[in-house]
Every structure is written in structure tokens, then in C-alpha cells.
Length: 167
Image (cartoon, rainbow, N blue to C red; front, side, top):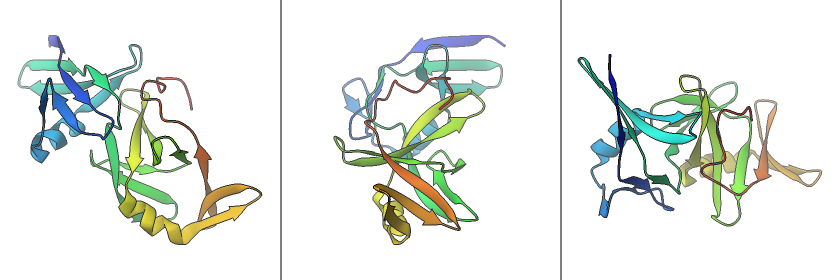
């Protein structure tokens, strides 16, 4: 199967809005479709939307990613802290980062298919739920849940920092 490589005009801005050139993409169905097909090339360290239909395959590389490409939408109460992302992936959380410049909480999902890390913003809805598990000890904030401590680490979000390196 031949894979066509396309350079798109798609940008994810600092507020996690999706744009195609100068036009904001406001159709939630289109954004969801893009997120469901979002991948990251670990060699080029670039995001792309991977489309397959019949005998046609296309990789559309995003022009620029400034904000978070994914959001954690739901908190899953299991034996560990798990989030459901808006690409429908369920992921365990090892640590949560706080970016004081963006005033954002975020983490990383390891996409085993593309063998790369994709960052996601933790929504205020989830933070409200997690606030009941917040603790502070030895100058460190963390979420204590089911006898597990999930640290909150201060780290500035740099969208192109995460490649195929182990984190």
C-alpha cells in the first residue's frame, strides 16, 4: 500500500484550539476524528494524522503544535489513577506535571504504536476530583490514591521535547 505524505496547514495553538491555516476548526466531530488518528513520528518528532481508506493511506503532518494535542477527559476509578483521553485511550498515570507559566497540569501518554510520548492536558474537571487525594509531605505535592503516590512535578511544557526517548 502506497502512503502519501502531506504537509498540512494544521496548527494546535496555545489554547489547544485546532486551526487549518487561518480558519479555526470548530467542528467537534472533525477534531475528534483528527485526535483518534493522531500519531507522532518518533524519528522526525512531528505529529501527523494517519488516514486509511480502502487502498489509500495518507499521513498529514501538522504544521505546528504549541498547545496540548490531547486532553484527559475522564478519571477512571480503578486500582491506580487512570484517565480516559479524548482519543478514547485509557492510560495509567505515573506522574503529573505542573507548568507554572501556562498554569496547566499535564502528563504523558506513551503511544506504543508510534513508540513515542504524546502530552495531554489534565482538565479542571479531573483536577477537582483529584483534589480530594492531594497531599503534601517532604516539600512535595502528590496525589495519594489506593496506597499509591502520584507526584506532582513542576515542569514547563515544551511541545517538541518528547520524542522516542524513554521518559
